[in-house]
Image (tube, rainbow, N blue to C red; front, side, top):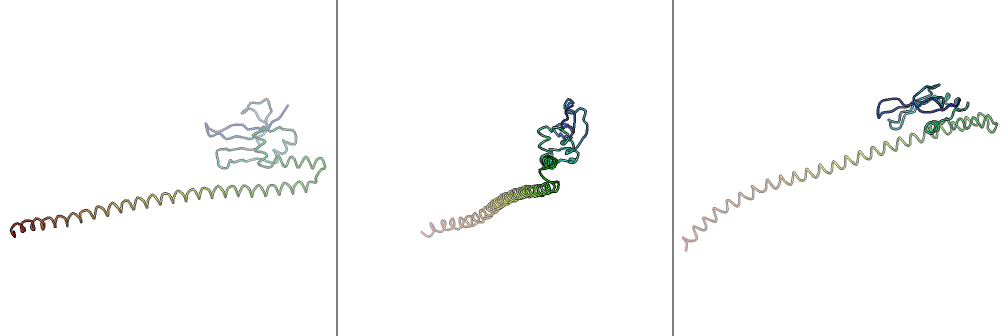
Length: 182
């Protein structure tokens, strides 16, 4: 009987989570399985994978075939590399110490890349936030200037009208005086 490592869906509608299971190839997607070796949640950023690496390696070594998605997950977690190195040890191409050293160096590099990616995402979020704050600050300054300009115009208008009104009676007084003087 052929054995596959694949995903079994669970969770609610539009918020699916997946169990990584070892199942007979004839079983349905959510049907009977031999062993649950992990879980995968694509709804988080970055997606969350919890995996029993040793059990996954065991099943790969005894001939279980991963599906494309499961292979991708196993590869990201380093199980496929570990299998590759273990096959080399079994054939006598490299020693176990060399295989462990290669895997350790890959794992350290992977952690560095993950942290760099997380830092880059955080920096992008911070930069976008700063740009939004700067744009909002400019809009607020423009509004404040418009309000200040409107207040200055309103205050100056009554002040200008008052002297014009005061000059008008003097002009009419001058007009009344001028004919009498003639």
